[in-house]
Length: 157
Ligand SMILES: [Zn+2]
Ligand SMILES: [Zn+2]
Image 1 (cartoon, helix red, strand yellow):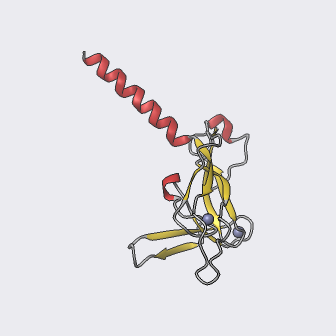
Image 2 (cartoon, protein in one colour):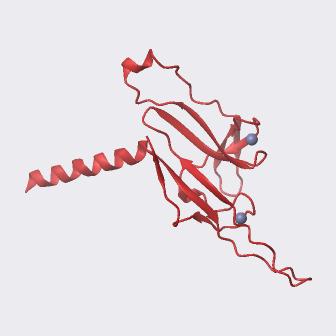
Image 3 (cartoon, rainbow, N blue to C red):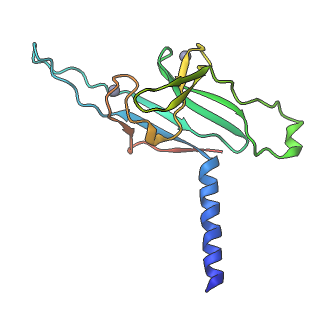
């Protein structure tokens, strides 16, 4: 009886371990309803912004995701992961963890937010760590940005 418990715990550890290292890509879409103009009574076009968002790194490289407002796209920074085997260290170019642009303190939430530089324009962006954090559409800013379940998901190794 005791043996079985141990085995189950081990299986759970392996599963959660895999989930931490593997990156995932999801098709996301803005589901905000179009607004009616109060003066003309006309309905505007729906936002419908779509993007394939990938969060998380692969086996040997870590990756950070964010949205750059200046470039109007999701951007990524990557660096060499901690899990690379020693024999690989001499063969590949080690990319260090990106140096942040700085920190800001948000008075409303009390959070300290670390700002990173966009790889294209060097402008500021905040890291999005989980799909759960991505609630607002980066284009219309409405809280209706969600995973498009009709599209396939991808896994990154
Ligand atoms: Zn940019
Ligand atoms: Zn939108």
